Image (tube, rainbow, N blue to C red; front, top):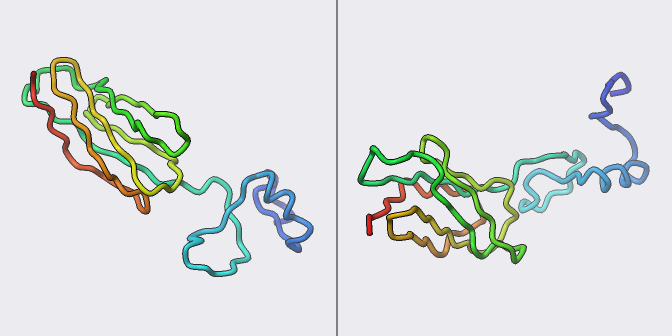
Amino acid sequence: MEACPTGALIFGEYDKIKNIAKKRKAEILNPEFGLKPHVYYIGLPKKFIAGTEVSPKMDEALENVKVTLPRAPTGKKITTKTNNYRDFEFENLETAKRYSVLVEKAGSHPKNIEGVHRDKDVYLGEIPLSPK
């Protein structure tokens, strides 16, 4: 660890390095287990919600279907668009009790999925949109 050129590995008494850990937002792996670990991590992946939009007309544009989390825990809505495979993903979400996912596409009825629990990663599967 002394030879680490990037400073990614830090070793020492916790009292001496706790300010560094706090500044770098270090966290423990699986805090829900209630253990008292001695290793802290920076940049652990957060929970995600993902899915795939499917339309009856496969000749339509594959990408840019609007997907929104209207009730994000921050109080702000979060929006993304599907990629060229019709997939979407909301990454690095903080744990919350429930999310709502709204999928909207021009010429189709919007699809709202309520009660998505955020205690684990969620793949919603294929989400069909029906034409207006």
